Picture (cartoon, one colour):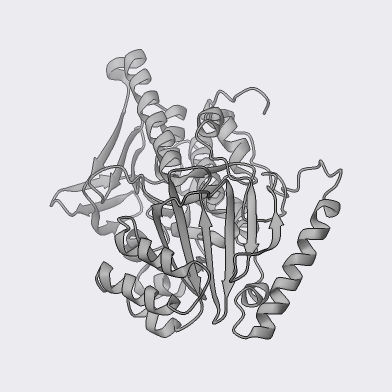
Length: 427
C-alpha cells in the first residue's frame, strides 16, 4: 500500500519533505497541516549555508531560491555614536567561517513561498501525467493536531476541527516549540530537550530610514544587550534585539499579550543608547513582532514510534549559528531518501534517519557558549574588550582567508537515486 504521511507544519522543512516524498513515489498520500489560516510568509532574513545549497541543487530549486536572495554586502559593528568599529564581509556558503552575512541570504517568507509553490507545481504536473494513478498532496490550513495515539503500524490523529485520521507516519515539522513533539514524546522529555542560551530575542520590521544601505549594523550595548539592523536594500528594516539582561522577567512574558511583550523589551532597552529610541518607536507600530527565549533542541532519539522530528522540532541550532535552514533541508532530504530506499519498512527508515542525522546535527549546532557570553558584555571594560577584539579581527580577516578555495563542509549529503531527482547543472 502507498505510504500515507501527515506532515505538521508548512514552513521550510514541511513543503520540502512533501516535494521529495511525492517526487520519489507519486502514489503516496501526503497531507501538510498548518495551524495558521494561510501560508506564513513573515519572518526575518535567513542563511543558506553548507549543505543547504547542494540539496537545493539536487532538488532543482537553487536557481529559483537564488533569484529571491537579498543584497546584503556585510555588517558594520558600530558604537553608541554610530562610529564604525569594524566591518565584515560576506561568508562563502561552503565555508565554516561564520559572519552575520552569508553568500546566499533570503527572506524567510520568500524561501517558504518557493518551496510551497514548487510542491504545488510538481503535484499538478504529476496529476496531469498520471491521472487517477496518482496519490494526493493536500495542504490543510487553519487546522492543527490535538492528539496522537499510535501502535506498531501507524498513528491515529485527532485534529482541532474535530476530524480524525490514521497515518503510516507523522512528521513533526512545527518548529522549536513543536506541539507534536510534546504530544509524542511526553511533557518531561519535551521540556528537557530545550537547552537555553540565557538569551531572549525579539524580531520585527519597520520602515527603512533614509540613507540606509546594504550593510547590516550591529551595536553592543552595556547591560548585556545587542541590536542588529538589516536592510538589504529592502523597503523595510529588520530589527533584531538580543538581551541577557533581566532574563527572569523576560522569561515570564511569553504567555502575555503582544502589547505586554513589546513593553517588556522596550523597558529592557530604554537606556541602551545609539538609535534605540527610533527603533523602539518602530517596534510599537510593528505588525510582525515576535519574541522568544533562544536555545537549542537536543533529542537523544529523533522518532517515537511512527512520529518523527524534522528541522527545528528535532535539532533547532538557534539563529546565531545561521544553520536553521540547513538543518531543515538536510533532515527533509535524509528522511525522504531513507523512506524511499527502505521501501515499506518505515521503522528501519526512521532508525537509519536517526543515525545519519547525528553528524549534520553536530555541525549545525556547533557554537561556543563562552564566546557567546563574551559577546554580551555587562561592564565598560567588557565592552571595550569586545570592541577591541572585533576591530583586530576585522583587520586580520582579509589575510586569514586569502587564496582559500576549498569547501569546509565536513559532511556531504549522500545520493539517493530512489528520490528520482533532476539536479540543476553545476552540482
